[in-house]
Image 1 (cartoon, one colour):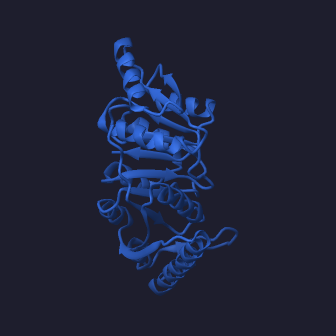
Image 2: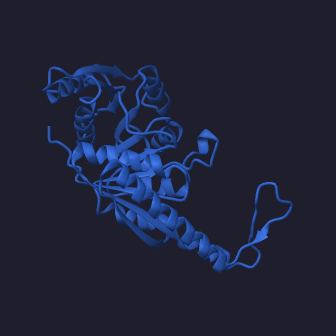
Length: 278
């Protein structure tokens, strides 16, 4: 089985407190794969366009009325965010003795992230931690990136990091082979535990997939647990992850295993990082 190559990792930063753990996740993976680590912050030009509208007000919690927003004030706010992120990246890089190249661009966040995905092997993005409802944990930008990114994508939520045990789905497709390859490498760092999910298929196909997994795992020290699903749904996958105390979930990015709707539901509701492999 051909090993997946991860030579460049890009961390997408925003103005939330999730940035520190996203950077730490990037460092963990960059160190593991000896990859280049870059960070990207996109100054949202749409915020400036909104600030040009005369009727827009900023609502502050506890205040009786909203306060007006203007372009100059929004520009200062953006520059403050950018300066904070520069200091954060520099501080974390120094603490971990690693080089992190930070790029700051301005434009439409979703489209620019998708453009950036063409030049990297793995894009790490965060969920919207301001949205408390499970069904709303990822916003429109993350959804757009997931559907259009040209690279492997890791989605993290606040407080999570790249940990083990590893859970990976395997359908026999090229993308799932990449996921299995990456999972095997990561599993060696956690007492050689690996949980492989096989889809709900007929018996002959299940035997074929089981054999393919066995042939792919050439290291006899790896302890592989095969889990056969009864339904190919986000809910059942998350149940398996929880039951086996999985801390990282790897899936193929296509719709061979899960429909796009089910895949987005899984990513939205997952409490562990999810990596989608091409």
